[in-house]
Image (cartoon, rainbow, N blue to C red; front, side):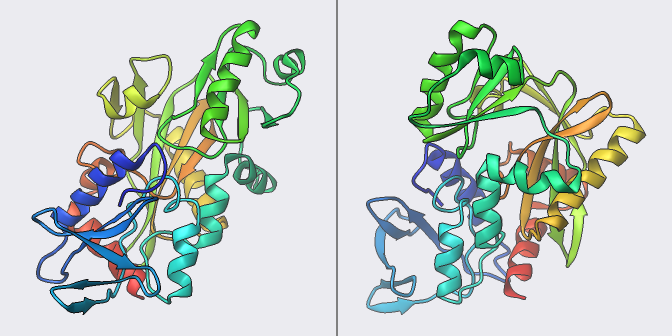
Length: 316
């Protein structure tokens, strides 16, 4: 838990929830904090013991402890972008999230949308910028229209995202996004019902969880809406049977086409009754307020069962 990005506080919350709900009859849990300046095991008295990165072990009271499995609850870098997945693969240590390639691909919104296009997955119109590129405001507006969204290409929890209503505000929004990442994506505004679809491997099967409808009090589903209660999250979503069937099929197809494993949560907006993909999270929030645990509860899966299943899948 933890990580190097703006999302580290949420990750610590998620990690502590996993730790709290682990089945004590099956598992002995250890909270490992991963930060740029230190990796350490934190015991229940908040004492810190440094992790040996050579084999991901820790020495406590002169006894070396190694682990059977890693429950990856790091949102953002380095847990959601492939780095930790690659490290654990080299150590031959099972971990609960998707593989290194899938993590790197889905973390890069631009590359992920490009990879899914040949499979008929609908998305917003988009325009890409790298740091240092000339900013052609007229070209951007011609391609994506107004209003539009300016986003950091590789960031989560709505950090570095702005809704732009007027051409004059584009440069300011682009500067905000470039604070989070050196690549940005500018997308057309899709007006319609927004939903979040959890897809997991549960007891060996690809399982689509009950859909959540997002109704934000703010202009869009931003950080405040996600974490500070400024939104309504309605599970199950108020969709027609046709809409539900379509978005379930698309979410499952994405999970299987990308050869995902572990938990995932995809965001869609319905435009003309068709679900358009916004993004995929491969390590969704796991706090008690988070969407995926809410969806699992509606599906009759307890937190303990949800986490146990993820560990059992990893250990396969």
